Length: 420
Image 1 (cartoon, rainbow, N blue to C red):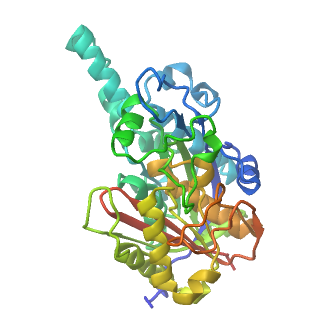
Image 2 (image 1 turned 30 degrees about the horizontal axis):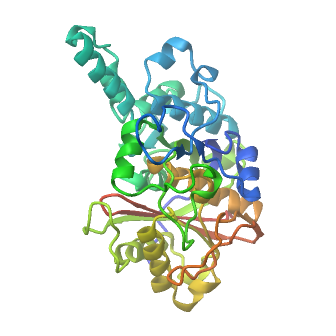
């Protein structure tokens, strides 16, 4: 095990979510425990008119940026930045942080996204092609930059400390949380916001993933049944949008202000398959390596793990390889560890998923309940673990793993544990 004696402890003291099933922590958690899906027919564009066979996504119902921003501010921001800002405000409020904050050079923001504000780039491109370069909005280019979402959160907080934007596909949210925790752990900050967002339900994203044969097409009339991780009749992932913010603090900093503590961020790791742009290595070695490194970073033995929040995308390859990875790392004990997929209800919010699922792990530990994997109906011989099918389960979870495996062979794993 790695030497942990020199590291400061990092705890989660605030959670903010904007998701397809709820944008308040209690409502979000209640929906997950009840197994309610947020997948629905796409409303942000006409998928049928665009000729796209997949007509469903995990949209944010009734999201209105002017609930959080002035209309002028909102117009200048990508949807990614708008949703990020909303999640950050919710996380700040949940942590009971009073602004303005003191010692702002010791406060920072790490942000994760797979795609960022490409909607603003598209807007600028269309304006130029239709009306010429002189008609391009001067805010289009900066608004499209992936780090601009982090800028708005830093600006709101007055944060002057470490800031970074991580764009590692579907692993971005998990890495944002893990690397933000490291900033505190090694003394470069006392408080960090780890935020991750994806918000780009557009014809070219849905159409592009359909062209990759990655999306389901048989459930347009039953959207809630479309995301079915580990089920033998899974067809593909449901593209979605969403965000989560985790407020991370050094433990004595949190105690000094009487903060509520959800859980401790014990360790994390990332690695690369170096195998294929879209397909996980069938040997599962990259996933095994990443989970093992994360446990080593946390100083936790495999036999101490009580729960795994799976990447669980509902794609044929990912679910089989992830199941194999868990069996390779944990041996026979793999069959005793509850594994569930949040994406069975939310769909796959790409770069945001890891942060949302980190929040889920913190709530699982705090509330002693594991949410189900819904739509698990037909067993797959290659996916034969305990996926907590269809019904939530009370459980005294002390150590939770959260997995994220992204395009480009990007692997990340986060370890959370009960704080004591």
